[in-house]
Image 1 (cartoon, rainbow, N blue to C red):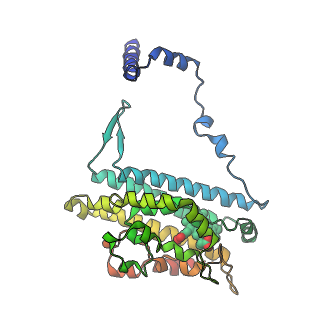
Image 2 (image 1 turned 30 degrees about the vertical axis):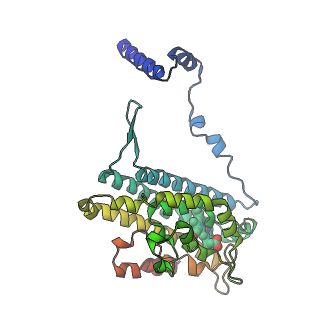
Length: 331
Ligand code: HEM
């Protein structure tokens, strides 16, 4: 035991000496410092101050908290995407940094993408909290106090897309084919990003305020990220694998599952909530900024597909169809 402690003290001395620091001072600090608590480590008290409804309708708290939960899962997804795209930094048990793991290895690739699959599966399943877990009457009233804010303005949702695929796949499908991919800048492609369609006023054809504010805040960040990821997004990482690894069925299925989770399953449960709250028999309730959400949100209209090369023409043709018929309209 004593021996062990001596060894550790020696290691600590070396660690601090490398930085020109004296271990003695740090040991004093250790003697004086308080024990770590759960509430400080998780910053729980701060976290629980972040739910500030705009109205007195009790269900608005559910709406805020569920959005926050979703953003945290988005953050976890980006945390993994960032490691795959930037060749994962390996930290050894001795705390030393092994440096960048230059060669992307298949088990790491599969395991990390599966983490994201798991996050989106949890989000898809838990979306019932939105669909069934709030009173429609309350929702329709408190949402008026939230205009023109919308989940549409979730930057992390768009960043996940920019990490997952070549930027061309995020261009509106009607114009996608006309661009010469290698010769067109990200800035130009951005003018035709698919989400413009979900943020155009039905009556005037103008960009909604929701979109204008979103672009004002994040345009530069998006352009920088998309440029940075041109050569190292998940699809490019897949192409950097050997030909044999690219044919590995586990790798292919993991990527296909990611495509289904992010571009079909989550958008569909989300759409289902819009149907529950905004669709009425006589007249549809307009979405944030008066957009045509019925023609925009369903995946079969957007046909946003990260890995079209992995799907057959028929599968692309049928993108998102069966699910809508089976689930949404039975509700
Ligand atoms: C009752 C619950 C919800 C309803 C009724 C709803 C409704 C809508 C509607 C109508 C749109 C179309 C754009 C607009 O007009 O604002 C939209 C977009 C969006 N919402 Fe929600 N939403 C709900 C919950 C959520 C939650 C919990 C999130 C999580 C962050 C979210 C994220 C998004 C995203 C990312 C978009 C853009 C989708 C795209 O561009 O394809 N929504 N939502």
